[in-house]
Image (tube, helix red, strand yellow):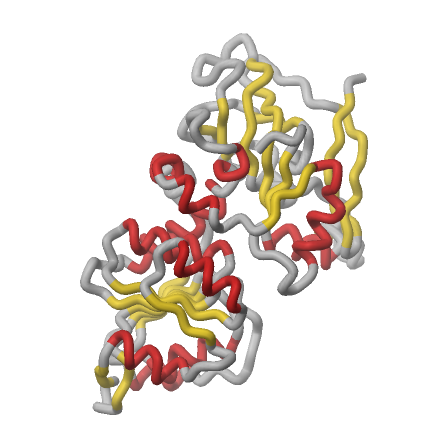
Length: 346
């Protein structure tokens, strides 16, 4: 039996195991993973110790990894869409055995990944060798960010602020600028993240730990008012990529009449949010979940602007040190975007 190494969940750490290497069927393909990003969802599963296994509270270990890029090394006899040697990114939600790396049968933080019923545009798409594997591995999180921007329906004249300069927030800032939005502000409390935001194209940044957000937004976006005529910053669209209750409340407190709030971050429960305050601005709340159509919509622009997107990666860690990679991801403030690379190639 041929084996491969694969990363599974344990409690607050990873379990690297030797498992059976998949064998593709007639309509399947086998991808040799060359890079795979670590996501907040991965760390969520590690804090849980896996996924619930039943009503008794027990947990089952699951294979991790849903942000892969790699190359086709085997293709079934009936496969015509891809060929051996193609470099591909993957739609984790496009296979019948469950979401890759999120409770499905397969995880991409492995040496090889089986793509069942392989089909370009459905579960894989090919990218050129001009793009490093590590940057191509950003395809999935950048699809999440793109969906949030699509949901915002931002127009060039809109003034936009993004709260949270993690990978999704920074990705949203990039997509907003590529969409032609004239002024994008990014808010965070970590100076290094704000430096990255400027490097990828944000027009201004605000450190909410040291600056008054309301005053700074009024300074850069002008003055407007809410439905009661009370003064508010002229910001048209707020993007919450942070998920902290204080951010949600800050938007409610600052929103002008008919402003929008796009909620892409997973929200932490709180009783401190004054939802009634939304009435004073007729604030529109827009939820953004995943990437219903964006998973491969983003790929051509990711290819075109790959040097800009590469700035989102803070750590590149070889698979032989995958435990260290997850330790970085599990430690608040230690890393922004960690990508695990395989065979030393990125």
